[in-house]
Amino acid sequence: MAPSAEQRIPSGQGESLVADGCSPSCGDRFHAGLCGGRHRICSASTVIVSVLLGDTQTFAATVTNASDTGVTWSVNGVPGGISTTGTITAAGVYTAPADLPSPSIVQVTATSSADATRSSGATVTVASDVSVNIAANPGSMELGATQAFRAAIASNGHPDTSVRWSLSGAACAPGCGAIDANGNYTAPQVLPIPATATLIAQSVADPSKQSSAPLTITSNFLLQISAPSSVPVSGTATIAATLTPVPGSKPSTALAWSVSGPGCSGGLTRPSGGTATADICLFSQSGLDASMSYVISGPGELTVIGKQPAGLGIIHLTLQIAATTAPGARTLFVQNTNLDKTAASGALEVQ
Image (cartoon, rainbow, N blue to C red; front, side, top):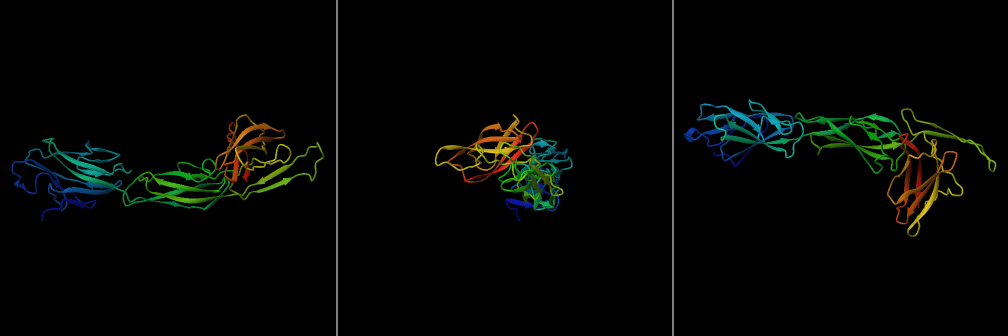
């Protein structure tokens, strides 16, 4: 029975492709072929072999009507192949790449040593059965806490087992924490809005395969304030705050205070049209520094347009709010660039 126009052979079996016929009746015509196993495929057929990432496939070449029966092997025209598309030995053993190439189809070719114009080839599809799973997901983490995440790569082949770690979420970045190349996650020291993030492990071998784990950032530290019950007019008083973190956590120890009074209304009411300004006051232990910058989480159209010290560590900020600003909660981060830390933060509510 003549072979079909296309034959797919399972990975691991020897493959063959006879270039000029299926029998010695080719006469004095040279023919080279890939052969092996139980399969002998005539020139009308296309050999398509599927090989998993990192797996091997053995090919054999038969040269007839020539005293030199040797062949040279190549992958996509490169003798011996390269790591990104797969390599092949002088004995015809093809090793698929550990990372999925693009495109994922490569050509393995045997070329006659006696006559370089004579060759035969097989199409190899580099396949992926990779799956990714993130282990040990705590579900929630306290401010500043750290957690080592690990991702397991499963495959029947031998793929690259490394992963790329990333974070996604409305508060990212910089508000949802950080994760390094080894999967070590550090929760933010300041509670973001919203207090959620998604941890993602993406396969390097097959970027289309990934696993994700939701995280909730929690804040359970204890904050106690000690202050006198009253302060005389023009008098001063010391207000002490003590922050006690949950064991294993490391929340920001910077304190953000709101101060009511003239010039410090803190009201953020949208104007009926155009833009308007609003003044707020924050308390920072480091005071006002020329390097300080300001980031307001959430939708735009709410910006800091002025800053000035107000004494005793108080920072007086002037905000510009547009009529088109969306209502809802925001977080104002005051970043001290010189100290590379958040000097203060505060919650804002746009009405």
